[in-house]
Length: 378
Image (cartoon, rainbow, N blue to C red; front, top):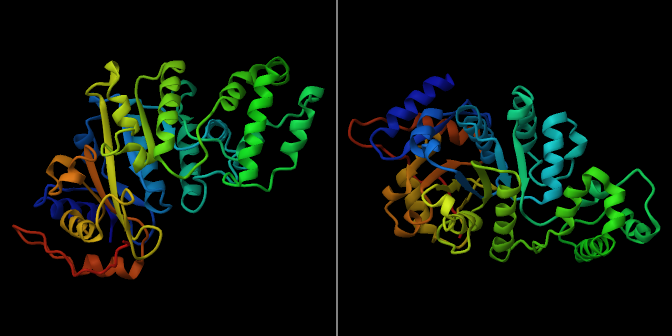
């Protein structure tokens, strides 16, 4: 089916519900037709300074969706600053890649596998098509991972006072971010670099401001979100001030973005005078996320049967994603979690997709939902 005809069908089907079609399928590919007019009307980006998207870190829907959302907000509203759940070193490498296209810079980084390969390739192509002073800028506010070793590497002679720590760094390239040995090494690097700051300034020269931010990044290395929120918010505030950022989009896991978590980034930012009434956030609910069977919103927030009911109520199977203002959701906890709720299908199975569209019928007063096809994670 022609993807634009499919989009029209989605819009017609969505008309009898308060949920609207945000994206439609392009055959059985992971690509989608993004409905910019619907998203513009629901977000009204011109009224906000900060837009947060609460994600689940899936690798099918989110890379493609984020690409469209970033391009939309940049091209139509001039929002060029993009915050991500990465460290300062990773953000630096992503920015280098966006301007050069050198894939070796981001090899092995988080958010580079599966469909994120297409995300970065397409974002680079878009980025170099705009004037240099309007190009996208990635910002990291999370803990440092092993790519910090790549950023700290030098080709000039290392002063004697730092040679021992550089030897330790050279021997650590097989570690991953959650190895206790890496955390110990990072603590050593940060401690030694701060203690020998004058030598570090000479060694890195004009790159020292970047290095200084890295060695002062005290965000804890943990997969738990709540312990990181306070430090991530401090880094966010520093970046907003240092880079004179007035508007931005931020992509973070939902425990960092939901209004249901008191320490979340949007909740903290809303307390600032300049951002009162200027913060907007998404909550996302996905089916077939990580596997062909499953639904995962913010972990532990809702019971399986509640999610199943809400997904079936608001998701239009002829659409890849539907969106609805949170105030219209028939569930108090989800209604209070964000400003806009997105329901979407992550992993695509061509047989199931064809069946869903074929069995979906239009009624003048109601939307006829297909039989329950999927299991859900507890």
